[in-house]
Length: 137
Image 1 (cartoon, one colour):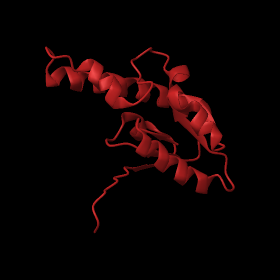
Image 2: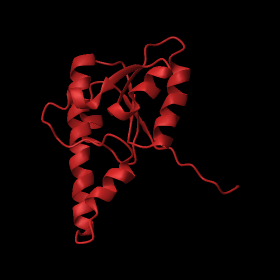
Image 3: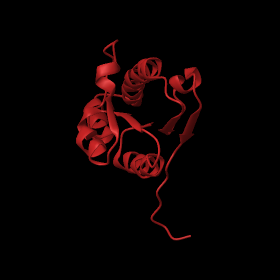
Image 4: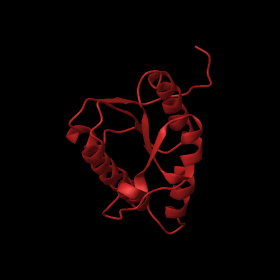
């Protein structure tokens, strides 16, 4: 199980994972800033950093904080996009290595976009994206 960085995505995965772990071992690959939170809910934690053998950039915290660092007054939208693509390379590299070593039965992923590792996985990948609205229907 994995997710893009952010509390909403992390919380959605924790909720889904809590249901799944009632009979299965659930491993959660994420960044180190949330290790304690993930382990508090009884998941086996896997660090993106430890599996990122090419040393690509990774975000270790909230993405907006890291993105602000890349958005200096003299930078362009292209610089911000490049930052996000560089970070995605790190997560992709880590997930490919995790899949190779762990050989999971299935992967659940909360991402806004399709990641290359999802196509290369030798197991089924259930990709979803959680949207939270504050407006009543």
